[in-house]
Image (cartoon, rainbow, N blue to C red):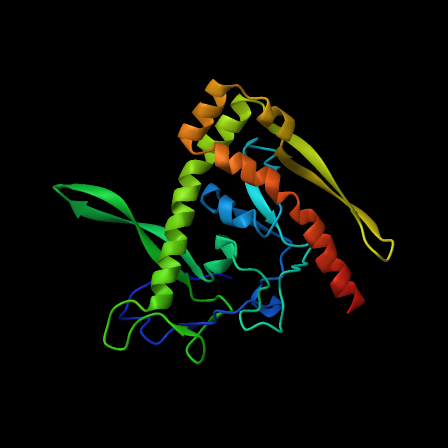
Length: 245
């Protein structure tokens, strides 16, 4: 169940949000949807892959967090944050918050402006513990300002998503990839249904094509996806350590 409502100081003055990550809060997911605005930070920590919707044929980027369904190898109860990485994908870092749109009157006309909504049924929402959303005498808390920045980046990333994948498709840079996993205990598995950037094709683009991708802001993102695949080894090592206890 979800209960999305417009966040406001009057009704939610005493609401707090637990800013920690744990399976009990729904953070035990093997992958998180991510956006172009995050790629540069994500590639330092996670493998970035693409998934393709069978009906719309559109691509969406994902950060791999685990090898098995419902497994997030970055969850670590020994850490205060509960997360063993410096950067956390925005769709998880935002917690119970999301962007909504509100129609407002401006200059004799109407326009939709982004506003913050909160899911009051989210397990991190309560009145007893966690981070306050508003200051005692009014105004947003530093935590809520941080959340607002995350949501803005997500909003900008959603807007850039289709254009980025259109550019990658124009130069036929996207290719399927099967990820083979072999653990120290001999267990083998294969992650299928994923796509990545063809590094050879990316390296073979001519100067005009590279310039076009660069000016659009997508060249750096393509290289980030390629570089991120080295984090597959990191996932395997994390899984091996966890299996050894």
